[in-house]
Every structure is written in C-alpha cells, then in structure tokens.
Length: 225
Image (tube, rainbow, N blue to C red; front, side, top):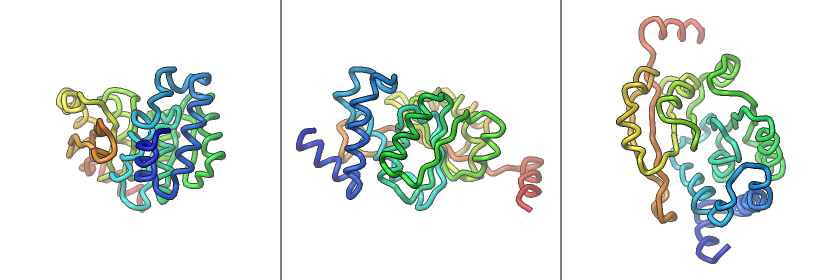
C-alpha cells in the first residue's frame, strides 16, 4: 500500500483502518481463489472496491437497520460495517460458499454489528424477517428495475434503497423510473460520494419507498397493532 493510499484509508476508516487493511489482505490472498474477485482486481482493491464502498457510509442515519443485498465478497457490506459500527447490518447472500466467506470475515474482523443471512430478497421468509428496514444497499447486483422489485418491499415507508452504480446511473434511472414507481419507489435521485478521496467518486442511485395508501396502508396499520 502506497503512502497516498494509506493516508486515504486513515481518512475514511479512522480508528478502524486496521480492520480495513485486514479485510483487504483477506481479499487479496483468498478472493481470486474463492471466486470473489477477478485476478485484475487485486491491484485495485482500495480505490475500486474498499474505499469505493466505504464512502457510501455518509448516506445512512445513525443507528439505521441496513440490509446489504447480494453481499457476495463483502462489498459494500464489510467496509460499511467497519466504518459505521453503529449500523445494524444484515448481509443477505444466496450462495452457500459466499455465506461461508462472509461469516469468516465477520468473525475474523470482529464485526459485532453484522448478521449473515442466506437467502434472496424476493423470498417470502426473508421479506418477513427483514421487513421494516431503514435502508437497503446493493452493488453490482442487478438493473435498477429488478433491484426495486426485490429491495423496496424490505423497507419501511420512507426507507431508502442505496444502489451503487456506474457512470451511466442517470441513464439507468431514466430508463427504469416508471418500473421503480410501480414497485413502490419515489423521490429518486443520483448522487456521488467520496470525491475528496477517490479519483472517480462513487455514484449512487437513491430511491425512497413510497408511503402506502389505500388497502396497502390498511394492511400495514393492522400489522402494527
């Protein structure tokens, strides 16, 4: 790790930088062999993956209940859990071998604020367990239209989907906006974070879950009694 990268790691992770370095070491030593990252990603773990994920932390309110859908190799979930120990995080991942990896990371890094759950966001039992979350995050999982259908039902009304996307995020949002609304989304926007530490800031699509109306609202009120 060069001096420049080390400075930026300390800037983003603060007192938790040692855990971030430990996670980077785990990924660089095991990530390719276990099919978590491609061989070319090892040399760009910090800018492209760890810092890229960690800077999203500023988008979550204190103490939020957050679900990371399709956690895979632990991005953005692990960096987010490291930099924001106040968050109550669930890593949701369907593949057993990746669930095993995530569990190993959580144990090795001492991430007491994380629960690892095997499953898919669209499954009934998962939705029941995670219903009412404050935020859902996803990185390189699916197009926005699918993410909205899968993730918005996990959120409380007013909760937010935080989808890490590439530079074409605005075009994707324009393309899928109607589908997102049909899935219950509102107040959609594109923002960037991390411009002070990354050469290419992280682009994020934000979608708020709409307040339920009509029969949906009545069902929710009955459930809350």
